[in-house]
Amino acid sequence: MATIALRIVRKDVTSKLKVNLEQVRHGHHIRGKPPMIARTLKQRLELLNETDPVLSAKVNIGFSVPKISPLKKQEWTSERKKRRSDVDFERRVRNGQLSIDLEEARRVWLETSSPFEIHKIAEHYGIFQHLFGDAFFFPVVPLSISYEIDNDIFVRVHSGNVIKPAEACKLPNIDYKVKENTLWTLVMSTPDGNLENPNDEYCHLFLGNIPGNKVNQGERIMDYFKPIPARGAGYYRYVFILYKQNQPLDYGEYKKTEPCLQLNERNWNTLEFYRKYQDHLTPAGLSFFQSDWDFTVKEFFHTELDSAEPVFQYEFPKPYVRPQEWFPLKHPFNIYMDRYKDPRDVMKQFLLRKLQTVHPFAQPKPPLKYPNARPINGQLASWLKLAIQHERLGWGRVNELK
Image (cartoon, rainbow, N blue to C red; front, side):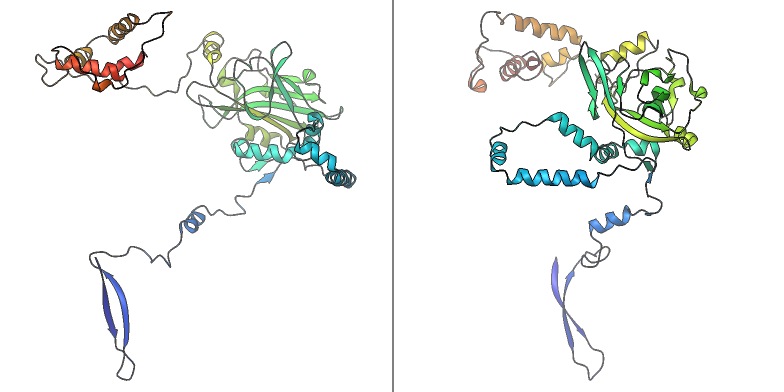
């Protein structure tokens, strides 16, 4: 309840009387500052998420993105002006008669905005945060990675597309364009799903001292290991990172005997690896995909790893059934008895009832238009009448068989 009260303030005899109208709420006290003085929700969130710009600054550990030559920009500008002034070209665009060379469009995209867009997508998926911490890089060397499923059928790795473990069983085809007299290192790892230490990764492929783009001639430190996302854990990220070497490197400490099927031997930490070789390695290429569980993961755990498959699913407790009573009053007879039967027997009973009315060459009977308006003939028990009504309405276990 709120009322208007008069407050008279008198300072001295000569001063005038000041009369203020205030709204007084009985039994209520305003908590905090008034709305015109208190911070808004946006201001509070900004204050809560405020970070030090020096401490939160990201460090670029890669190469600078090559700039487009002024001559190329001038050529594109003149071509754009020419197309805009062409009336016939605009008409073909509006009518959908214009054909676009996708290979040429992709080539221009790789030369111009691909490093920035791939970096933005990787930042969205948390690739740099979970692999390099406060560091990032722009992928200036485009990676072309594809998995061969069947003869002349390939699944290509883009930026976060989904590839099933059944499609990524074999070593992928890896290609990139660099100078011949250079050395490179390629690492494939996943920041998700380490079964022993959640802060570490699993290394799925490690190739070092690759001469140019001749991946087959590189030193194989760790052989290829297919994706094994656990059941119920969602999507795993599998990241390919291409490093440029300034000299030949000895990766003997990471060398594993092939085939390396021990998960603890594949423990990996990208940040520690880069810190150790940061004077000789510079990340230049990036590509990644996502994968979730399929039937081949279970088979791989049982046959290749010779271990049980990890399953991350909630185990629902069994429903509580209280002890039976001699005379259960106010309980439907059939539902009460089904509660203490084997569920398989109950479902078999409903299935046999359905098979009596199903004909392979005849359409099923149409449902009743007004099921509750049809009387149930005969003097039947209340529990049986209720069961007939549920069957007409399609409620309960009967609905599961339709």
